[in-house]
Length: 370
Image (cartoon, rainbow, N blue to C red):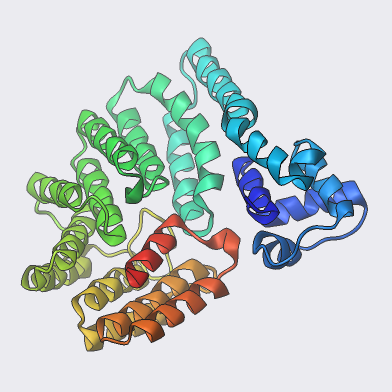
């Protein structure tokens, strides 16, 4: 493993952004260093940190200096890293928070959890999975102690769905297991909207990623059977099912579901400009449709969806702009220009700062190159 990848993994394990690592290094070394320097020189593996910076990296990342300097020691360290460095710290937080909630009896209020969900909804749009996971793990440990009323089951099910989303479908059983548990928790809430939303969100997550397609289809069918009322859950389910159909080559079904999805959006879509995982404004619908039509090879419809999405996409969400650009790369591949499509998509991904990359984007790149 290169030093650059080690720096990236150690930083991510602590839930730090590149900016946070830069701040920690600047404070310790007394010499300013920027996020861009860490990203473009070290973590890109283009340059090796100097001995000066290796010493300070070892200190702020809490590893022996030999690990940073020597490849053999680095490999030995990595073999036991998860068990000896990261896991105990996370486990301590989980155990402390979980038992505190139990000892205090009531724990955080329903209103607290509603507010927490709103925060996670917006954070998901801008933050990486690692940053969210560390906080979310603690909150899940606490709320599981409080699932003694329907509203708490509803809140828990949405947190569990987000947790599943931080383990993309390529992780197979882990993501699916959490989606299944989230669906069961939603059922215990007795709330129809929650039951439909959780299953619809699972369906679009797996379908968009092109992973576990039979499971995506199953969740979509369950959501559609629970209620035929227009809702964001139903909208997600329709597009999850559409993506699954497109990937297996059932173009007629995918196009029919796209048409039905647009009708549901007209009745249940979110306000434009809203940036939350619990919302589907016009720009996000465009992202769903852009990839769907690119997968189907419908170039005109795909470009129209991309253009519509760009008109409303907030400038604060560059990751989704990257999605749209990579869809164009997929279109080129589908049109027969594989090399140009891969180059276009890779350039779009490279233009996004590394700390904003998502596992979903990497899965999309794999689809384009595959």
